[in-house]
Length: 419
Ligand code: AMP
Ligand code: MG
Image (cartoon, rainbow, N blue to C red; front, side, top):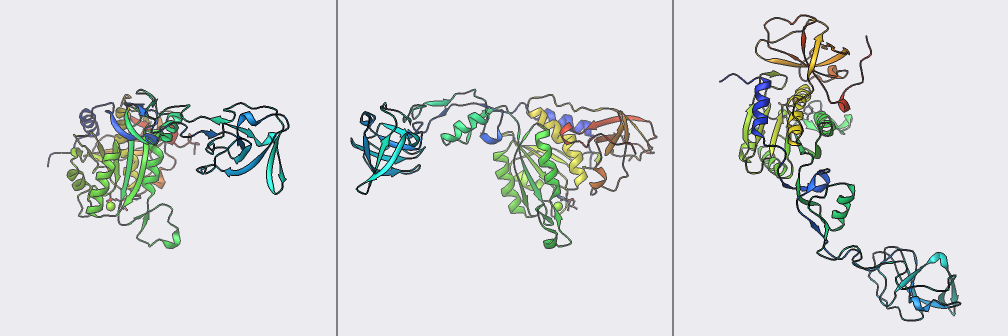
Protein backbone atom coordinates (compact mmCIF):
# COMPACT_ATOMS: atom_id res chain seq x y z
CA UNK A 1 0.00 0.00 0.00
CA UNK A 2 1.49 3.39 -0.95
CA UNK A 3 1.56 5.86 1.93
CA UNK A 4 -1.53 8.06 2.22
CA UNK A 5 -1.15 11.58 0.82
CA UNK A 6 -0.81 14.52 3.17
CA UNK A 7 -3.70 16.96 3.49
CA UNK A 8 -1.97 19.52 1.27
CA UNK A 9 -1.22 16.97 -1.47
CA UNK A 10 -4.70 15.52 -1.34
CA UNK A 11 -6.37 18.93 -1.55
CA UNK A 12 -4.24 20.10 -4.48
CA UNK A 13 -4.98 16.83 -6.30
CA UNK A 14 -8.68 17.32 -5.73
CA UNK A 15 -8.75 20.95 -6.82
CA UNK A 16 -6.66 20.19 -9.91
CA UNK A 17 -9.19 17.53 -10.93
CA UNK A 18 -12.21 19.86 -10.65
CA UNK A 19 -12.76 22.37 -13.44
CA UNK A 20 -14.27 25.55 -12.03
CA UNK A 21 -16.48 27.48 -11.96
CA UNK A 22 -19.50 25.26 -12.36
CA UNK A 23 -20.50 24.37 -15.92
CA UNK A 24 -23.89 25.18 -17.46
CA UNK A 25 -26.43 22.72 -16.07
CA UNK A 26 -30.14 22.18 -15.51
CA UNK A 27 -31.04 22.84 -11.92
CA UNK A 28 -34.00 23.39 -9.62
CA UNK A 29 -34.13 27.18 -9.60
CA UNK A 30 -34.94 27.58 -5.93
CA UNK A 31 -31.55 26.08 -5.03
CA UNK A 32 -29.73 28.10 -7.70
CA UNK A 33 -30.31 31.42 -6.00
CA UNK A 34 -27.81 33.93 -7.41
CA UNK A 35 -27.13 31.89 -10.57
CA UNK A 36 -27.82 33.23 -14.07
CA UNK A 37 -30.31 31.80 -16.56
CA UNK A 38 -28.64 30.16 -19.55
CA UNK A 39 -31.94 30.02 -21.48
CA UNK A 40 -35.01 32.25 -21.67
CA UNK A 41 -38.17 31.31 -19.83
CA UNK A 42 -41.34 31.56 -21.89
CA UNK A 43 -44.88 32.22 -20.77
CA UNK A 44 -46.76 28.90 -20.94
CA UNK A 45 -50.04 30.81 -21.47
CA UNK A 46 -51.25 34.38 -21.46
CA UNK A 47 -50.43 36.33 -18.28
CA UNK A 48 -52.90 36.88 -16.76
CA UNK A 49 -54.54 33.81 -18.30
CA UNK A 50 -58.03 35.36 -18.10
CA UNK A 51 -59.57 38.80 -17.60
CA UNK A 52 -58.82 39.02 -13.91
CA UNK A 53 -61.05 40.92 -11.51
CA UNK A 54 -58.89 43.15 -9.29
CA UNK A 55 -61.47 44.22 -6.66
CA UNK A 56 -64.31 42.57 -4.75
CA UNK A 57 -67.43 44.12 -6.32
CA UNK A 58 -69.90 43.82 -9.18
CA UNK A 59 -69.19 42.95 -12.81
CA UNK A 60 -71.33 44.83 -15.32
CA UNK A 61 -71.51 46.86 -18.51
CA UNK A 62 -69.71 50.15 -17.84
CA UNK A 63 -72.25 51.93 -20.10
CA UNK A 64 -75.04 50.93 -17.67
CA UNK A 65 -73.62 53.15 -14.93
CA UNK A 66 -75.65 56.34 -15.07
CA UNK A 67 -77.02 58.37 -12.16
CA UNK A 68 -79.71 56.47 -10.22
CA UNK A 69 -79.36 53.14 -12.07
CA UNK A 70 -80.10 49.85 -10.28
CA UNK A 71 -78.86 46.55 -11.72
CA UNK A 72 -80.22 43.09 -11.03
CA UNK A 73 -77.73 40.63 -9.48
CA UNK A 74 -77.88 37.44 -11.59
CA UNK A 75 -75.09 35.39 -10.04
CA UNK A 76 -71.76 35.24 -8.29
CA UNK A 77 -68.25 34.39 -9.51
CA UNK A 78 -65.73 33.70 -6.73
CA UNK A 79 -61.97 33.35 -7.39
CA UNK A 80 -61.17 29.95 -8.86
CA UNK A 81 -64.61 29.50 -10.47
CA UNK A 82 -65.27 29.22 -14.19
CA UNK A 83 -68.10 31.73 -14.86
CA UNK A 84 -71.27 30.10 -16.21
CA UNK A 85 -73.24 33.31 -16.60
CA UNK A 86 -73.39 35.90 -19.36
CA UNK A 87 -73.97 39.46 -18.22
CA UNK A 88 -76.37 41.35 -20.45
CA UNK A 89 -77.32 45.03 -20.24
CA UNK A 90 -79.08 45.81 -16.97
CA UNK A 91 -77.51 42.85 -15.17
CA UNK A 92 -74.59 42.42 -12.79
CA UNK A 93 -72.81 39.59 -10.95
CA UNK A 94 -71.04 39.65 -7.63
CA UNK A 95 -67.31 38.94 -8.17
CA UNK A 96 -64.23 38.51 -5.98
CA UNK A 97 -60.66 39.66 -6.48
CA UNK A 98 -58.89 37.08 -8.63
CA UNK A 99 -62.07 35.78 -10.29
CA UNK A 100 -62.46 35.65 -14.07
CA UNK A 101 -64.61 38.49 -15.37
CA UNK A 102 -67.88 36.86 -16.52
CA UNK A 103 -68.55 37.06 -20.28
CA UNK A 104 -70.56 40.08 -21.35
CA UNK A 105 -69.26 42.29 -18.55
CA UNK A 106 -66.53 44.84 -19.30
CA UNK A 107 -65.94 46.47 -15.90
CA UNK A 108 -66.14 45.93 -12.16
CA UNK A 109 -67.35 48.44 -9.58
CA UNK A 110 -65.83 47.87 -6.16
CA UNK A 111 -68.32 46.92 -3.44
CA UNK A 112 -67.45 50.04 -1.38
CA UNK A 113 -69.21 52.08 -4.10
CA UNK A 114 -72.41 50.03 -4.06
CA UNK A 115 -75.49 49.42 -1.94
CA UNK A 116 -77.40 46.19 -2.27
CA UNK A 117 -81.13 45.91 -1.68
CA UNK A 118 -83.81 43.36 -2.50
CA UNK A 119 -86.62 44.12 -4.91
CA UNK A 120 -89.41 41.53 -5.20
CA UNK A 121 -87.00 38.99 -3.74
CA UNK A 122 -84.22 39.75 -6.27
CA UNK A 123 -81.12 41.52 -5.01
CA UNK A 124 -80.39 44.75 -6.77
CA UNK A 125 -77.34 46.97 -6.66
CA UNK A 126 -77.26 50.74 -6.64
CA UNK A 127 -74.09 52.81 -7.07
CA UNK A 128 -72.55 55.82 -5.35
CA UNK A 129 -70.75 56.77 -8.58
CA UNK A 130 -72.31 58.21 -11.72
CA UNK A 131 -70.19 56.66 -14.46
CA UNK A 132 -67.69 53.87 -15.20
CA UNK A 133 -65.30 53.00 -18.03
CA UNK A 134 -64.75 49.67 -19.73
CA UNK A 135 -61.74 47.98 -18.13
CA UNK A 136 -62.28 49.44 -14.65
CA UNK A 137 -60.91 46.99 -12.04
CA UNK A 138 -60.02 44.40 -14.70
CA UNK A 139 -56.50 43.13 -15.42
CA UNK A 140 -56.93 42.04 -19.05
CA UNK A 141 -55.89 38.59 -20.29
CA UNK A 142 -52.38 38.71 -21.78
CA UNK A 143 -51.70 42.27 -20.55
CA UNK A 144 -48.39 41.25 -18.93
CA UNK A 145 -47.26 38.63 -21.44
CA UNK A 146 -48.65 36.60 -24.29
CA UNK A 147 -48.29 32.80 -24.41
CA UNK A 148 -44.81 31.79 -25.72
CA UNK A 149 -43.34 35.26 -25.18
CA UNK A 150 -40.14 35.39 -23.06
CA UNK A 151 -40.90 36.49 -19.52
CA UNK A 152 -37.27 36.12 -18.43
CA UNK A 153 -34.31 36.49 -20.75
CA UNK A 154 -31.05 34.58 -20.86
CA UNK A 155 -28.74 36.24 -18.35
CA UNK A 156 -31.44 37.02 -15.79
CA UNK A 157 -30.25 36.36 -12.26
CA UNK A 158 -32.18 34.00 -10.00
CA UNK A 159 -33.62 36.28 -7.33
CA UNK A 160 -36.82 36.05 -5.29
CA UNK A 161 -38.56 38.03 -8.05
CA UNK A 162 -37.37 35.97 -11.00
CA UNK A 163 -38.05 32.74 -9.08
CA UNK A 164 -41.67 33.84 -8.68
CA UNK A 165 -41.99 34.88 -12.34
CA UNK A 166 -40.68 31.50 -13.50
CA UNK A 167 -42.90 29.65 -11.02
CA UNK A 168 -45.93 31.56 -12.34
CA UNK A 169 -45.22 30.00 -15.74
CA UNK A 170 -44.79 26.56 -14.19
CA UNK A 171 -41.00 26.59 -14.57
CA UNK A 172 -39.07 25.34 -11.54
CA UNK A 173 -36.05 23.87 -13.38
CA UNK A 174 -33.94 25.51 -16.06
CA UNK A 175 -30.42 25.72 -17.45
CA UNK A 176 -28.25 27.96 -15.31
CA UNK A 177 -24.66 29.05 -15.17
CA UNK A 178 -22.57 30.04 -12.14
CA UNK A 179 -24.31 30.59 -8.83
CA UNK A 180 -23.79 28.58 -5.69
CA UNK A 181 -22.86 24.90 -5.83
CA UNK A 182 -25.92 22.84 -4.91
CA UNK A 183 -25.30 20.28 -2.20
CA UNK A 184 -27.26 17.14 -1.38
CA UNK A 185 -26.51 15.27 1.86
CA UNK A 186 -26.97 11.55 2.43
CA UNK A 187 -26.43 10.28 5.97
CA UNK A 188 -26.14 6.54 6.41
CA UNK A 189 -26.20 3.89 9.07
CA UNK A 190 -28.63 1.26 10.38
CA UNK A 191 -28.09 2.75 13.85
CA UNK A 192 -28.82 6.35 12.79
CA UNK A 193 -32.30 7.79 13.37
CA UNK A 194 -33.71 11.24 12.58
CA UNK A 195 -32.52 13.92 14.98
CA UNK A 196 -36.09 14.67 16.13
CA UNK A 197 -36.58 11.12 17.48
CA UNK A 198 -37.88 11.36 21.08
CA UNK A 199 -35.77 9.69 23.77
CA UNK A 200 -38.63 7.40 24.81
CA UNK A 201 -38.67 5.69 21.41
CA UNK A 202 -34.89 5.27 21.05
CA UNK A 203 -33.25 1.89 21.52
CA UNK A 204 -29.91 2.10 23.38
CA UNK A 205 -28.00 1.19 20.21
CA UNK A 206 -29.54 4.00 18.18
CA UNK A 207 -27.85 7.33 17.51
CA UNK A 208 -29.56 10.54 16.42
CA UNK A 209 -28.45 12.06 13.12
CA UNK A 210 -26.53 14.94 14.63
CA UNK A 211 -23.98 15.13 11.81
CA UNK A 212 -26.45 16.20 9.20
CA UNK A 213 -27.56 19.10 11.44
CA UNK A 214 -23.93 20.29 11.59
CA UNK A 215 -23.39 19.92 7.87
CA UNK A 216 -26.67 21.51 6.84
CA UNK A 217 -25.94 24.55 8.99
CA UNK A 218 -22.45 24.89 7.53
CA UNK A 219 -23.41 24.69 3.84
CA UNK A 220 -24.56 28.34 3.51
CA UNK A 221 -21.47 29.49 5.46
CA UNK A 222 -19.38 27.66 2.85
CA UNK A 223 -21.11 29.70 0.10
CA UNK A 224 -23.26 26.84 -1.18
CA UNK A 225 -26.93 26.00 -1.35
CA UNK A 226 -28.50 23.01 0.38
CA UNK A 227 -30.90 20.99 -1.73
CA UNK A 228 -31.89 18.23 0.66
CA UNK A 229 -30.66 15.96 3.40
CA UNK A 230 -31.75 12.32 3.57
CA UNK A 231 -30.98 9.34 5.78
CA UNK A 232 -30.55 5.82 4.40
CA UNK A 233 -29.85 2.42 5.99
CA UNK A 234 -26.71 0.36 5.39
CA UNK A 235 -28.21 -1.33 2.36
CA UNK A 236 -26.38 -1.64 -0.98
CA UNK A 237 -29.45 -1.19 -3.22
CA UNK A 238 -30.80 1.83 -1.38
CA UNK A 239 -27.30 3.33 -1.42
CA UNK A 240 -26.93 2.89 -5.20
CA UNK A 241 -30.37 4.41 -5.88
CA UNK A 242 -29.91 7.37 -3.55
CA UNK A 243 -26.42 8.13 -4.86
CA UNK A 244 -27.64 8.03 -8.46
CA UNK A 245 -30.56 10.34 -7.81
CA UNK A 246 -28.51 12.81 -5.77
CA UNK A 247 -25.71 13.00 -8.33
CA UNK A 248 -28.15 13.97 -11.06
CA UNK A 249 -29.82 16.68 -8.98
CA UNK A 250 -26.88 18.26 -7.15
CA UNK A 251 -23.42 19.57 -7.95
CA UNK A 252 -21.92 18.01 -4.85
CA UNK A 253 -23.12 14.93 -3.03
CA UNK A 254 -21.87 14.86 0.56
CA UNK A 255 -22.25 11.52 2.27
CA UNK A 256 -21.82 10.76 5.95
CA UNK A 257 -20.58 7.40 7.22
CA UNK A 258 -20.25 4.12 5.38
CA UNK A 259 -17.01 5.04 3.58
CA UNK A 260 -14.47 2.82 5.35
CA UNK A 261 -13.65 -0.70 4.26
CA UNK A 262 -16.19 -2.52 6.46
CA UNK A 263 -18.78 -4.87 5.00
CA UNK A 264 -21.53 -2.36 5.89
CA UNK A 265 -19.77 0.50 4.11
CA UNK A 266 -21.62 0.72 0.80
CA UNK A 267 -20.73 4.15 -0.54
CA UNK A 268 -17.46 3.37 -2.39
CA UNK A 269 -19.15 0.64 -4.48
CA UNK A 270 -22.21 2.81 -5.12
CA UNK A 271 -20.03 5.70 -6.33
CA UNK A 272 -18.21 3.35 -8.70
CA UNK A 273 -21.50 2.02 -10.06
CA UNK A 274 -22.70 5.60 -10.67
CA UNK A 275 -19.60 6.31 -12.79
CA UNK A 276 -17.72 8.35 -10.19
CA UNK A 277 -13.94 8.27 -10.49
CA UNK A 278 -12.10 8.38 -7.19
CA UNK A 279 -9.66 11.29 -6.85
CA UNK A 280 -8.58 10.43 -3.32
CA UNK A 281 -9.61 7.78 -0.84
CA UNK A 282 -7.72 8.06 2.41
CA UNK A 283 -5.59 10.96 3.65
CA UNK A 284 -2.88 10.98 6.34
CA UNK A 285 -4.96 13.01 8.77
CA UNK A 286 -6.67 12.40 12.08
CA UNK A 287 -9.62 12.57 12.30
CA UNK A 288 -11.02 11.95 8.82
CA UNK A 289 -8.55 9.44 7.37
CA UNK A 290 -11.11 7.42 5.30
CA UNK A 291 -12.39 10.50 3.39
CA UNK A 292 -13.21 9.80 -0.27
CA UNK A 293 -13.50 12.48 -2.95
CA UNK A 294 -14.48 11.69 -6.52
CA UNK A 295 -15.92 13.15 -9.68
CA UNK A 296 -18.23 11.85 -12.39
CA UNK A 297 -16.59 12.89 -15.67
CA UNK A 298 -19.73 13.01 -17.84
CA UNK A 299 -21.50 15.72 -15.82
CA UNK A 300 -18.85 16.92 -13.38
CA UNK A 301 -20.89 15.90 -10.32
CA UNK A 302 -18.72 15.51 -7.22
CA UNK A 303 -18.86 13.32 -4.17
CA UNK A 304 -17.30 14.22 -0.85
CA UNK A 305 -17.70 11.22 1.42
CA UNK A 306 -17.09 11.92 5.09
CA UNK A 307 -16.47 9.28 7.73
CA UNK A 308 -19.32 9.25 10.24
CA UNK A 309 -17.69 10.22 13.50
CA UNK A 310 -18.83 13.74 14.37
CA UNK A 311 -15.36 15.25 14.83
CA UNK A 312 -14.31 13.69 11.52
CA UNK A 313 -17.26 15.42 9.89
CA UNK A 314 -16.30 18.69 11.58
CA UNK A 315 -12.67 18.44 10.43
CA UNK A 316 -13.21 17.15 6.90
CA UNK A 317 -16.02 19.55 6.09
CA UNK A 318 -13.67 22.44 6.86
CA UNK A 319 -10.52 20.93 5.37
CA UNK A 320 -12.00 19.64 2.10
CA UNK A 321 -15.65 20.55 1.55
CA UNK A 322 -15.18 24.25 2.26
CA UNK A 323 -12.35 24.84 -0.29
CA UNK A 324 -14.09 22.62 -2.87
CA UNK A 325 -17.31 24.63 -2.60
CA UNK A 326 -15.41 27.90 -2.82
CA UNK A 327 -13.55 26.63 -5.88
CA UNK A 328 -16.80 25.56 -7.59
CA UNK A 329 -18.37 28.95 -6.88
CA UNK A 330 -15.47 30.56 -8.72
CA UNK A 331 -13.96 32.08 -5.55
CA UNK A 332 -10.34 31.55 -4.49
CA UNK A 333 -10.14 28.16 -2.80
CA UNK A 334 -7.53 29.30 -0.24
CA UNK A 335 -8.75 28.97 3.32
CA UNK A 336 -8.03 31.65 5.93
CA UNK A 337 -5.22 29.73 7.70
CA UNK A 338 -3.18 31.92 10.03
CA UNK A 339 -0.35 31.36 12.49
CA UNK A 340 -1.20 30.56 16.09
CA UNK A 341 0.85 29.47 19.09
CA UNK A 342 0.01 26.51 21.30
CA UNK A 343 -0.91 27.49 24.85
CA UNK A 344 0.25 24.10 26.17
CA UNK A 345 2.20 21.02 25.13
CA UNK A 346 0.20 18.98 22.62
CA UNK A 347 0.45 15.35 21.53
CA UNK A 348 1.37 14.54 17.95
CA UNK A 349 1.38 11.37 15.82
CA UNK A 350 4.37 10.26 13.75
CA UNK A 351 2.42 9.20 10.65
CA UNK A 352 -0.50 11.61 10.39
CA UNK A 353 -1.17 15.30 10.82
CA UNK A 354 -3.74 15.99 13.52
CA UNK A 355 -6.50 18.53 13.04
CA UNK A 356 -7.83 19.34 16.47
CA UNK A 357 -10.73 21.63 17.33
CA UNK A 358 -9.11 24.44 19.33
CA UNK A 359 -10.12 27.43 21.42
CA UNK A 360 -8.52 30.76 20.55
CA UNK A 361 -8.01 32.03 24.08
CA UNK A 362 -6.48 35.27 22.81
CA UNK A 363 -5.66 36.33 19.26
CA UNK A 364 -2.97 33.99 17.94
CA UNK A 365 -2.92 31.73 21.03
CA UNK A 366 -4.86 28.47 21.04
CA UNK A 367 -5.72 25.89 23.63
CA UNK A 368 -6.43 22.34 22.47
CA UNK A 369 -9.12 20.65 24.61
CA UNK A 370 -8.29 17.13 25.71
CA UNK A 371 -8.92 14.69 22.87
CA UNK A 372 -11.54 12.02 23.56
CA UNK A 373 -11.57 10.53 20.10
CA UNK A 374 -13.43 11.52 16.99
CA UNK A 375 -16.76 10.39 18.43
CA UNK A 376 -16.84 13.14 21.05
CA UNK A 377 -18.09 16.41 19.65
CA UNK A 378 -19.04 17.87 23.02
CA UNK A 379 -15.40 18.73 23.79
CA UNK A 380 -15.43 20.93 20.67
CA UNK A 381 -18.37 23.07 21.77
CA UNK A 382 -16.27 26.11 22.69
CA UNK A 383 -13.79 25.84 19.81
CA UNK A 384 -13.15 28.46 17.13
CA UNK A 385 -11.26 26.51 14.52
CA UNK A 386 -8.88 23.66 13.73
CA UNK A 387 -5.22 23.65 14.71
CA UNK A 388 -2.89 21.63 12.49
CA UNK A 389 -0.39 19.49 14.37
CA UNK A 390 2.13 18.18 11.85
CA UNK A 391 3.41 14.59 12.13
CA UNK A 392 6.03 14.29 14.89
CA UNK A 393 7.39 11.54 17.09
CA UNK A 394 7.34 13.62 20.27
CA UNK A 395 4.78 16.02 21.80
CA UNK A 396 4.83 19.55 20.39
CA UNK A 397 6.05 22.00 23.06
CA UNK A 398 3.95 24.89 24.31
CA UNK A 399 4.43 28.19 22.41
CA UNK A 400 5.20 26.41 19.11
CA UNK A 401 3.71 28.37 16.22
CA UNK A 402 1.46 26.25 13.98
CA UNK A 403 -1.37 26.89 11.46
CA UNK A 404 -4.88 27.61 12.67
CA UNK A 405 -8.01 27.53 10.50
CA UNK A 406 -10.83 29.57 12.02
CA UNK A 407 -14.31 28.24 11.24
CA UNK A 408 -16.25 30.58 8.93
CA UNK A 409 -17.47 33.43 11.11
CA UNK A 410 -21.10 32.40 10.89
CA UNK A 411 -20.43 29.01 12.44
CA UNK A 412 -17.82 29.83 15.08
CA UNK A 413 -18.38 30.02 18.83
CA UNK A 414 -18.29 33.52 20.33
CA UNK A 415 -14.85 34.76 21.46
CA UNK A 416 -13.71 32.78 24.45
CA UNK A 417 -14.08 34.06 27.96
CA UNK A 418 -10.69 33.66 29.62
CA UNK A 419 -10.78 30.81 32.21
P1 AMP B 1 -19.11 5.05 10.01
O1 AMP B 1 -18.24 6.06 9.35
O2 AMP B 1 -20.37 4.78 9.25
O3 AMP B 1 -18.35 3.81 10.31
O4 AMP B 1 -19.56 5.67 11.41
C1 AMP B 1 -18.59 5.98 12.40
C2 AMP B 1 -19.27 6.37 13.70
O5 AMP B 1 -19.97 7.58 13.50
C3 AMP B 1 -20.32 5.37 14.20
O6 AMP B 1 -20.20 5.28 15.60
C4 AMP B 1 -21.62 6.00 13.80
O7 AMP B 1 -22.68 5.61 14.66
C5 AMP B 1 -21.33 7.47 13.91
N1 AMP B 1 -22.17 8.21 12.96
C6 AMP B 1 -22.29 7.90 11.65
N2 AMP B 1 -23.13 8.74 11.04
C7 AMP B 1 -23.59 9.59 11.99
C8 AMP B 1 -24.50 10.67 12.00
N3 AMP B 1 -25.10 11.05 10.85
N4 AMP B 1 -24.72 11.36 13.15
C9 AMP B 1 -24.08 10.96 14.29
N5 AMP B 1 -23.21 9.94 14.36
C10 AMP B 1 -22.96 9.25 13.22
MG1 MG C 1 -21.89 3.39 9.43
